Image 1 (cartoon, rainbow, N blue to C red):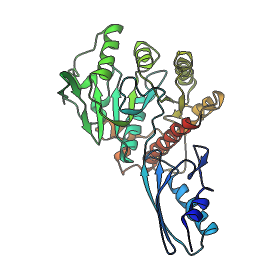
Image 2: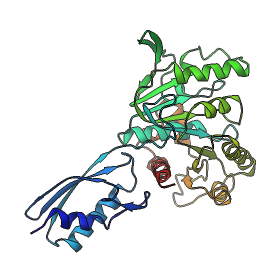
Image 3: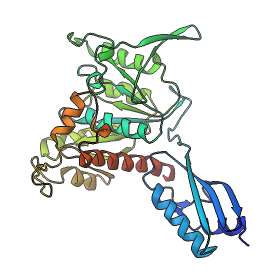
Image 4: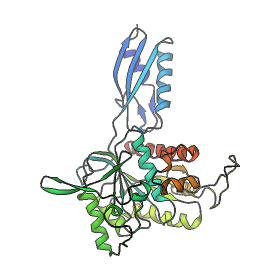
Length: 355
C-alpha cells in the first residue's frame, strides 16, 4: 500500500536545481493525494517561467517509480509563487516582487530589444509584468509595442492622481514617448530628467507585479544613479555585442553596480548580434562583430552567461512593426534564443535565494 510518507520520502531525493535543496524541504510539494496506485500532487515553482520544470517533473516520476512503485501512475501539476528577492520590500513599489534593470554601457547594442522580449517572455509564461522605458532621450517602447500616439489615462487613488500604464500583450507599459509628441525633442537638463524618472516610480499605478523590467538608457549617468539609489533592484542584465568597443563599455556598466553603496547583483551578461546565419545556409554561423566576446566577459567577471542572440533581419522588422520577435512564428531560431535567455535570467534570479 502506497502511503504519503513513502511518496514524500521519494520526492525528498529530488533537488531544486537552483535553490540547493530538495522539493520537500523547500515545501514545494502540495495537494498530495493517493488512490490505490494513482499519485497526484502539485509542484509550486518560484516562477511560471521556470526553465527546469520538465526536468523536475521527470525526476519526480523516476523517484516514485524507483522508490515507491514501478506501476504507479503519477500526475504532476504546477503552480507558481514568484518569490521577491528585493532586500527591502517596504521601500517604493512594495507590490512589485522583482525589479530588473536591463543595461548597456553604450547605445546601439539592442538593449531595448532585449528588454522588450524579456518582458514578453515572462508575461507569456503567466507572470504579471511591467516594462518601464527609462530612456528619456530615446524612448523605444511606443514603437516596439505598436502604441505610438496613444496616451495613458489618469486615476485618482486616495486623493492623489496616478498615471495608468498602457497595457499591451499583458504587459503594463510606461514611457516618456507616451506623454509627448514623438516629433518633439526632449531638451532637458539632468535634474529634469531625473524628476521625470522619479514620476515613473511614484506617480504611476503599477499595481502588483511579479517583475518590473526597466529599460535603462545607455551609459552610466544621472538616470542610472537616480534609479539605483531609489529602487531596491533584484538585479541587472548587461547587454553587449561581441566587439571590443562594446565590451569596454559593458565593463563600465558592471563596475557601476559594484561602486554603488547598495550593491546590485548582476544577473548575467547576454550577447546580442552574436552571429549571422543566412537563410540559404542554415548550418553556418558568421561572427561579424567577433566571437564569444560576451562569454569571455562573463568568465572574466565570474558572472552567468545568459546566451547569444543572433543578428537577424526579422528581429529588427518585428520591433519596428510593434510585434517583438518573441510573439512571432516566422523565426523560431531567434524566438528560442530569447526564450532561452529569459529562462537563464529567471534561473539567475532564483539562485539569489541561496546566496
